[in-house]
Length: 112
Image (cartoon, rainbow, N blue to C red):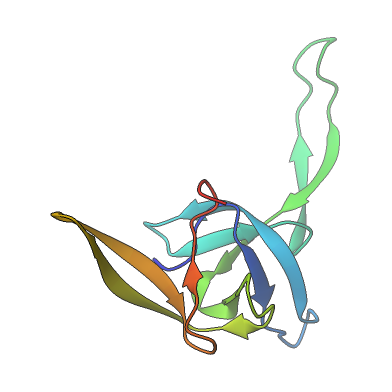
């Protein structure tokens, strides 16, 4: 999957929701979904768990299919498709994500 946790993404608009930018909070590789900060808010009814955790209705982000998001390139600042290239340093090969618009390398959120 081209999207990683911590990436800034652009969510493509649908009929029910407008297009929006946000940070990826979670990635589910098996179901091919991502959870974007502040997008697709759902209401979840939570049962009380004693005196420390009261019950009620909790609002939280729901998953969005990965085909409905585009990675925002950190260098050009625009939503772009993601490509890959192999970088050879010595005898070590690493696969790097690349912006299809400007050609710049996209570092993983841990490397930034």
